[in-house]
Length: 331
Image 1 (cartoon, helix red, strand yellow):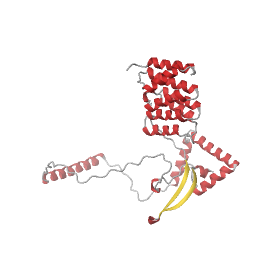
Image 2 (cartoon, helix red, strand yellow):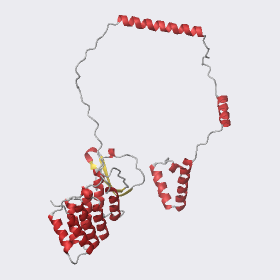
Image 3 (tube, helix red, strand yellow):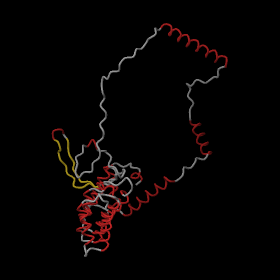
Image 4 (tube, one colour):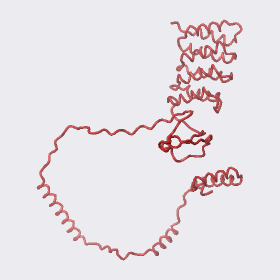
């Protein structure tokens, strides 16, 4: 286990060791204790070596060392002799400089126009990483170091290109990816839109994803039309009424990024959603939109009028519809 901990095993031995640890409870416990002990050792303070031990060690080294016989002993020269030698060096160097300066003709450099004889091509910019369902990667672009223990399944081998002796290995891989960036980065916006609109294999739930999006994109400067469009699609299509309620409620906090499609989704929810709580959130969003001074299209105004006068509609929905109508600014 110390060899495994210090990564001193070759890949085959390391893999076999990991497999054994996973199948043996005793070894798994020992492996956990070994890693914990290693981490504790890293936190211990460095102990200063005692002076007595240093002195004894240096004495033993001195006794074992052999003095070379070809070393010329250093003899201190008298100050007078040192000054005389220094003066001689200055005289010789000065004379050589003067003679060279007198014998060498003066050279004048005339300015000339600069000419470009060649342009070195800049290094190509590395391609950005794309999140895709399937891709083909050249082996030269992949690091030879496999980090962690990724789950590789459905492995297939093929002679990808017989003409140049290349082979191909296809597989499905499950790996954990973390994408970092500003909320306004287009790549981050597109990723979150995909997460909101595709719930099939998403964890945590879409409801929790909407909570996080609301906390992030409700801040000043962060609302984005693509996020509101994704929420509008959730409002139209999600089967769970609780998720639709959160989607409509979140849209209220992103008034500045609403698109025509987003407003249409709110109108559709107010008209046709079977759950009164969803209709309440939709009419609240439209009322807030009217109070902000936004221009409402005729279909939206007509829907509000009908809801305000509809006798079998929820009372709160009727009140909010009337409130939105009273807030509409004349054109």
